[in-house]
Every structure is written in C-alpha cells, then in structure tokens.
Length: 261
Image 1 (cartoon, rainbow, N blue to C red):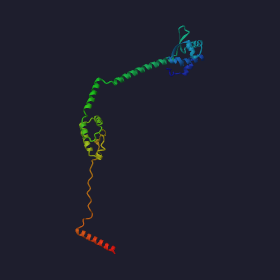
Image 2: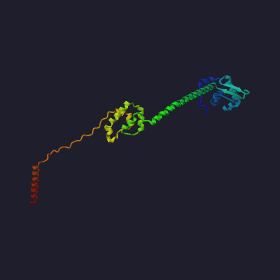
Image 3: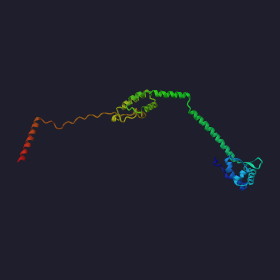
Image 4: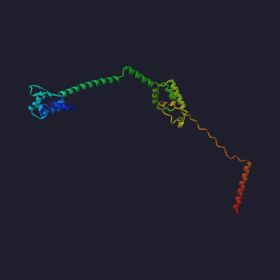
C-alpha cells in the first residue's frame, strides 16, 4: 500500500539542494517521492535501478549519487564493489518513519490495556454471579412486599408485571402502603372512576408512577329525584261536574235544532 505523502518544506529544499545540478535535483526529487517514501526513507538498489527509475544511464545515475554524497544532502552508502550497489537514505523521512512506528506501538499498547480493563469490568465475579442469581430467584418466587394488598384492592387489573416492577422501584414502606390503599378507596368514589363503569380508571403502573394517591378526588353524588309537579287546576266538585254536563247537553241540543231548519 502506497504512503499518502510526507511533509515538504520548500525553504529547506531550496537551501539544501542549491549545490546540486538541476538534473540531480530532479532525480533526487523523484527518488524521494518514489522508493524512499515507500521504504521508510531509505532504499538499497543497484545503480542500474536508480538509473531506470529516473530514465537515465547508469553512469549519470552514479554521478548523481556521488553529488548527493559529497554535498551531504543525502546519505549514500556504497555496497559490494562500491560501484554497482548503493543505499540511499533521507534523514527526515527516516526520522518520520521511526516516529510513526513508535506512535503505532504506543497506541497498540494503550488499546490492549484499555481492552483488558473493559473485559475485566464486564466479567462478573463468582460471588456476584451467585448473589445476582439468588436475587433473581427471589424476585421470581415472591411478590414485592405489600403488592398483594394493593393488587387486591385496585379495580383495573391489567399489566400486573409492569405494576410489580413499578412497585419494586418505589420501595414501599408500611406507612406508604396505608396511604396508597386509602387513596384507592377514595378514588373508587370519584367521578372519573365511576364514569362509564370504570372506563377511565388508569392502569396500575400509570397510577403508581403518577402518585395517584395524592390526587384530590371529587366524590360522586347521585342526582336528587325531582318530585312530580302538582296539578294547577283543582279537582271539580260533583255539583260543578253536573252543571258542566247540563251546559254541554243544552249546547249540543241548540246546535242540532239550528242545523235541522
């Protein structure tokens, strides 16, 4: 995998390479961006390989390497017979490669230590495992203290498991239990709980979370029966009834004679 790049300082480059020929500067720059960068700042190649990389002859490449060596711009170590093999190094690239290696080692060690700590943190001890299993067994076999009384009195018997969890979180004391039971009895006489056959009674867990026993409930009062209105007209006496009947007969007789003529 190719390296992404390196820090290039134009001022240092202009000063360090001013003593080199332009051809040598160009060749050195190509070696920097190619084999030196990819191999941690140093590479040992045959002189012919250096020549082929910059597209020149072996003799010119050897002359360029000698320039770098004599001007101390780069480190050149001749190997074998001192002519056919050379090791070219750039001091800055070598330092940067070594620094990257040290940082990588430190980060790796820190990561391993952190992973070990996290692993130990999530590994329960035998005693804690046993205690947690006992607690879970007790929770499964026995209902929370006072919950049976609450459940027996509360009218909306839905979501019992959720109600038990809420009850456990509350840590109900005997005094609080008495207050809760009294609140249920009071709420049973309220308008909301009696309306539509208890349609608006909340779920037990909801009522507990909302501290419903502290609500000021309005008691339900049945409507008073309204007495039937008294008749305005009094009952007529027998004499009045007789006179009314006589008047009605005479009126009918008179009308009959009128229409018969």
